[in-house]
Length: 367
Image 1 (cartoon, rainbow, N blue to C red):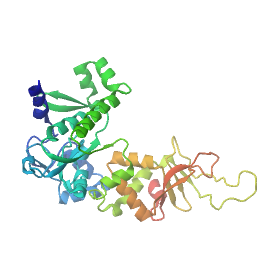
Image 2: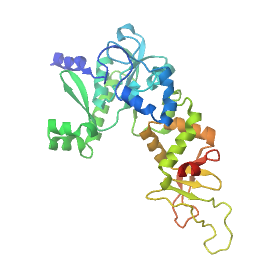
Image 3: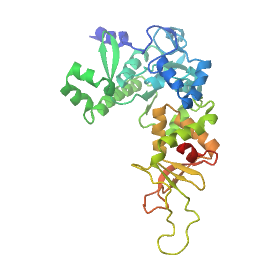
Image 4: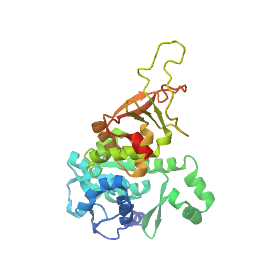
């Protein structure tokens, strides 16, 4: 029984998308040549990506199929930090020196052992931990939990991952529709799956008296992201020159959802008729309200949640963009009523205020 269990644990292999063997590789997973070439066709994205033309990313994979510059046999008894997770931990699309495991180990002073699996699920994190936690002198375990709706399965001694929205048909063909629905898609199923493996990871670390640091990528706060990636300059380089273009792109795509109106600061006449602070909007938003643009003072107010989601879809580093908007356009977080000056009364909303006196949003949007 023990022999068979050890065989499953230690002989299970993990697929690295587009990588079949140890060595130095140029592409992995979603970071592939086709996606890179397509992104270069966008003028806004090309500015961020030109550095990778000059200095391409290299993925150095060791004999254990880990993103490490050394084989684990070379470590000996030196203290190491283990890093569990998916592509966010592996560092897909990032230089090695910009990955969060590299930066954290630089802080702890221990050797970094990156166990991240691109596209991996939480069971992959647990299996990776079992494979290496007793082979090395582990000082800390850091776990950036993979996204929900990923489930592990084994075929031919290889661990693979179902990503529900991509593989739902294949899952139903394999397991049957009722089984997939009851075990993977119903409310609470994903939480149970993750809770199960989180507790197993916690148990292993407690049993071996190893500190465990865990973060759920779904709930990670912006300031935590800034801490983990504070030295990540992969996208931030040359951002100053292009932040205006990014801002223009966002406004153009949401032009019909932004309230255009003059500032109401100096328009109260004191007539006492209830109409003193009302201003006729120059353009009412359609469908939804994502921001406010005061045409006379050139102030743009954007709901951060909308901007962040848009940046994610455009593969733009949100934290770096916000910093550049603060530096160049006096951007600041505040609370205002987006419908101030109209007959619609809405509660205060968290917004990002941007001084657009250097950017002619109206002219660009109309051309």
